Image (tube, rainbow, N blue to C red; front, side):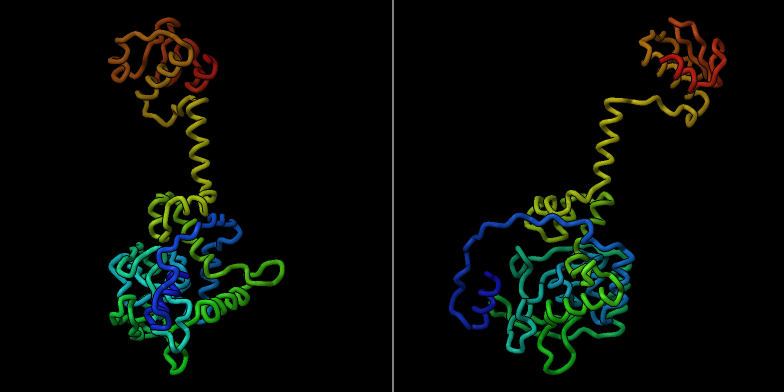
Length: 326
């Protein structure tokens, strides 16, 4: 609301912004449902069925996590070597012909602030393909301080009388839902299964599930706090659950090492160490020096020679020595 009122001040529709400086209590972050996150194959299906002009927007959202309004504000100045620099988003009233401020600063940011997001190769390829088909359109608008700003927009209309920028809801949102229906991505009621924001969820959940630090993902998404990222996407980290299970299991219930994967000399030493540790048997100090050279060790209290091939006293495989000695 504050951004809309500020834009009205720039347009000289009102003299001052009544919402400036007013802080509203934040609502709790909405947890993302796993079913609301498309798969990579579904992302490609949406891109294949959406109107060609908006194909790049699909991959900008899924590949860099941009909001719909940020993806539609993509311009030549955003593209950098190996990353994109996001500085603007499309205004909610940018589709109106009398709009003087089609672009506004990012959410939670001032006009001169930006955020950088790394780009994968497929995103770079989609940008190149878009430029080959459609040249960027120059858009001149007034900033919050009244200064004139020019952007080479990727999604500005090319027909006269079509408005300054496409409407996020009626243009891109409509084409997105239509693409879902054409691709067969529907729910039980026959409605589109995903929305443009689902692509942003895809980016975040994919990055987090593959070990990208959550504070980095939070910064790329443009969240005010990393807590917001945790509240929304924290439950989509099954790999973290598995790591926790493994760590606690190894701590409380350690298992004997897989000695068959060790070299021959290290195998004998590892077996003797494991036997002494699990049975509480003593261990002569001189064995530490001789074991790597001789390839075998002595369990002094039990008088059992443990060699790389087995036990001379028991004549059984190494793993069985551990099993029968515990």
